[in-house]
Image (cartoon, rainbow over all chains, first blue to last red; front, side, top):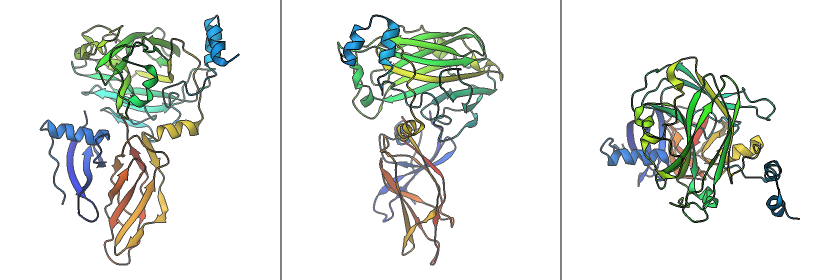
Length: 59
Length: 345
């Protein structure tokens, strides 16, 4: 299981929608797309659904 | 006479193998000879990682020692290999906790396995072959897992001589239950466990297709690879092919293997010479991926040459845009990071 310590949405350059998630996963700072087929995004959402992780709103 | 007819009329296993070995693209495994290593070697791994040779997912579950994962040059002689996947123990765990597990995964997309006709009366058997070398003797379990239907079949492999390359072949019967999904998700896994706690070992080796339970997944493993810092295991020449015959390894060019690996992980060069397009302090740079990736990739965080943070925009499996905002007027910026973007299973 991935160790996800931080997850936060970021907005697109025009600030109209969430573009992706910045996260620290297994100690690595990553930019994760909102694609259910992406394994990092899938694991983030699994942990969110399990109540183990909260994705912070974009700044 | 056609090649298919030649095969049908062949009378000896050797003749069959020789003919089958002329068929290209029969190996379902990518980078089975560990020739591509885009991420580089890993030192001190304590958790599961795709680091080391591409497509090899080293399983270090629940804390079972510390490991170096490398693209090694130790290979079986006379087989045409240059590299192998190697894990070497640097911190031992001689008494694994019940949930600990150590092994290797090779994961496959369902759309690439439709030829197996799994879940139908025409289900095909597959044959796995590989070379293995270990400093210990003992058994380890090799499992063919169906992730879509939570089923598995397995065989225990015996390492009979220490520090000696050994050729292994296993034929897994076809499964008439449970089709693989025809999509880009993880449908099947070749799984090898070299050590594990009782959660994984307390069952029995599933030698026929059956519903998967955790207790069976390492039931055939007694190698205890984590019990000493002297321990290592090398594997190369992994081939999975339709049918019940193990043919000689299908050697492919580096470029061919690299392109196949890039569907799952892609190392992008440093763009020191590429100025970001700038307009009113908004700077953008486009990456067009060399092959279509399996899914929209994860991208490492990066900054520009003048220290501005970047975000990723318009990402798809074919490319993405790096955006940043200049800290003031008159700044120019370059994307200087060397990136490995990933869309692994």
